[in-house]
Image 1 (cartoon, rainbow, N blue to C red):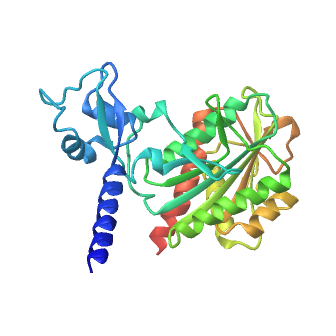
Image 2: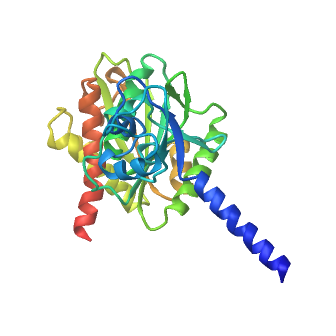
Length: 310
């Protein structure tokens, strides 16, 4: 009996200790930091987590919201932190890190209309002509989805603040995509989940570019997703191309492999310089903000319209 009581005590103690350890982490206050700015820099909504911050740091808060330069403060772990809702997945290792770092201080929740939506962004840039153009566009898309309440997973890795595709053979990378995405798909079972595969080649960031949207012909959800992205380009009259012809079917081996093996519906968006395009491509000026906004709006429309119908 005494042994059972001892075991129960230690089980309770371990649960209490580990529970306490995982409720917060420490951050050092920098010049100009107040409670609101410190929470924002950690990807948290200050209005929502202000009270918890005061409770965790009641022994260090003086004179209202003043923080002491160089002092360590406890930051609550929260599932709605932008550090958790925007995740970079290094597919080879299945390791996670926040997509954004210094940018967090400028991010704030705009709406929760995508609160039950999960997106997976796969980016392959075959040219180093202007990798920052593609990087900036994808980051803008991820950020816009996140501030509207979505969970975003970006495939790749972070090196010197530049997102890169994991290196390896094409076959191995495809298998890694399938493994890490399907794992998270199951973890998020019951939610709306979509994959956007962005493939860029020879994009200069200065010359006009050709864009096309593809879908898998055996996936009604994937076709709808692609159509909604394409429709935004059509609605905003961004091209003289007959955009009705620009929704194409997966044909290449890589795309077909992903479509057949990844559990969420997938659409492919290709970007290349106009000189390489055919009449089925949408011709666009290389405006990062406009391009990212159009894609984000198409992605959001697919979810909102589906919710409205249901």
